[in-house]
Length: 89
Length: 161
Length: 112
Image (cartoon, rainbow over all chains, first blue to last red; front, side, top):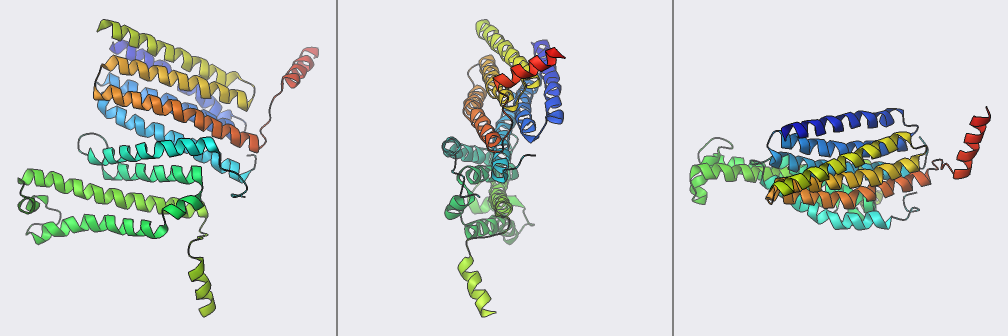
């Protein structure tokens, strides 16, 4: 079972690098904001997989709830700021 | 420009649905500081984050009508007062500053439990102060320093000078 | 007991599949709004399946109820964030690649 979680973690980690291409090279700020939101989702799952690997799930569940919340509020704040400023970056 | 855009109904509804649950979770994080990751500072930041969510979804004017700056100033001073108050209470009972086992005779509990309760009280003070300060920082940055609430007093000051 | 663990592994593999397709989508789609489709729908479903799998793997404890709480929060909050981003993109005039323009592009490329 440990081997299964390790392979799962490695696959998700490689997916993070693929999304980083869109964060760096996305033309304009909107593509980068969408890619950062996707990155936050993958980070959430990687946190829980690490919790399973170290047999201390209770600790990592609290951290991942807070991270899901902060990702949501951050994306809303960026969208609201860009809508208010009405300019294309 | 802010009043020209109508506030989005989807974001407003979801924010109104989530804010009570986020506040209960912040209280959970404050109370379980010694069992799991958390404590005073983290719980205060989560409380300030849910107020930031209210400001983002409903607008800064609406939130200012419900939570004024005077309330937040009182909260921040109150949080520090709780922290220093518990420390000075231990000092008055005959121990050092923040030496919690002296509170055992005051609350009729053994000294080990008095230490745990003292730390809990201090964490609550820290959380209230942190929430108030982060709300004030976010409010000042969001309005860029143009405070709408004290306009009557400002006008009188200019006439007097 | 072994049936729930096998079911949990199946859910986790389904979640991994949807993560993979959402990542390929955000890399290969031609426009901002189509990329929002990929990440808004694919990532949300993948996270939901993963969290159901984790909760089944743990059994019936307090931790698995907390994981179900994250799952409900994610299903409600992630589409809202996607909606806010797409509204902002619409206001700021992000280019929308229409079907006729894409056919024109392909015709020009093939003629060269």
